[in-house]
Image (cartoon, rainbow, N blue to C red; front, side, top):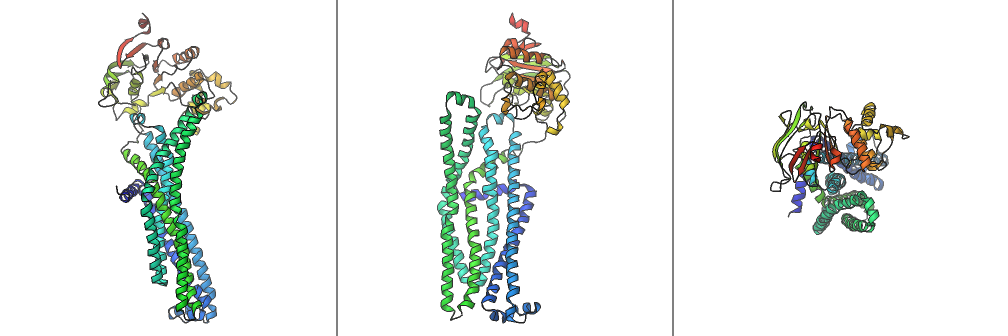
Length: 590
């Protein structure tokens, strides 16, 4: 596999991904790079006449090429040359420094702006993926992709790529200036330094690629271990498995950091040898000039050596920065490849979510429905047909694996049936109008996610703080029969619930979930085993709150216990993916 070709291809794909706006900004950056490079030429070129004025102003004053300049500046004596040349030299250095600072600021700004764009695109594409894709995706890989890898693309690819471009501009300009001063020395030095870096690149290419794959793999695994250890902290503490997770984390994190350290060492190691070689070349130049200057060493050598020394002082760090940037890019090649693949896979996703709710005045039906998760896999649901009238309360019961959750996923259009259709008031729900149907639905799961914010923010979940309707929040809490409890807390609706609602009881969390569903003012409420984890007394009180909801609401309740569904209009019993019966609660008991 040609790694160089692959890297070029990845960088080209990255260029296509960043968009027109960022491409224009980078084009302006190239102009800034050119101006900065010219400022480097001026600063290096200015040192030659400056040192000449210091060592031999008479010789400089007699230079016919500078005669017109001296006349313009009204300089009539050699001793008057030094001051304006000092001013010129200092100004050139200040201008060069300012341009380098501006270039660094703009280059960094663009890099992190593009990194933010990529991270946002990854997150957006992930959130808009179809539900079945989320079922097959490990959350730790997604988190690693959006956070670690997106950050890595910014700091280890974008910044280094722009740094290489700006460095190449400067290297060309600096070498060109040095060639004007001493062609032979400049060419020999350039080819010598270039050959050393080329040799190091050839020797370390495979190792950098291997480290890239290690970083890509271990970064996702590290997050996975952290999620499993901290997300299951109660069982970890009870089982005493802290050491197991510590050892797993240590092994993975050590491997990750060793790979990163190896890349850093490779990137920084040539600097010391190159600097020694550069200073050795300066010494050789000094020796050569001294033996050929015939007593005029100071006037002949000092300006040349000063220019070469300043050129080397600018050139060597830029060469090293270019090489270091290259190692960072190579070390992040796998992460860049994964990031671009995710962006490419989801480029056809529709982000349009603005729709009007579909008309639902009579009923919705499922007719002749079959479903399997894989084309050649077993059918999870088969021959499912039933009707739910608006305003009715329907129960769904069945053993684990009977297909209850899958049926709810199809009703909510998270999954599409393999065969059959969902009809709402006689209209087929498909890929074009499913969002209109989903806007009518609120879903209350068994395990509700509560963010570590206030009660009000959790009830109005997903609504910006400044747009929360607190009157509606209180009405929904009242209907969910939790308003009295909230009002007795010190901070009332501003009470912080803790991470995942850890400061609330199970019954309180479920009532918050009901209030959240009501806040959406949906026409259909789905309770997916929402009370199965509660004790009998708490479940009974929560179900009483559900039973007291508006008669205009259509309610679907999934449960394990038949008694939970006693107030439903009818109960749909699933068995091995098929409907065994649809009866009233009293008839099932007979």
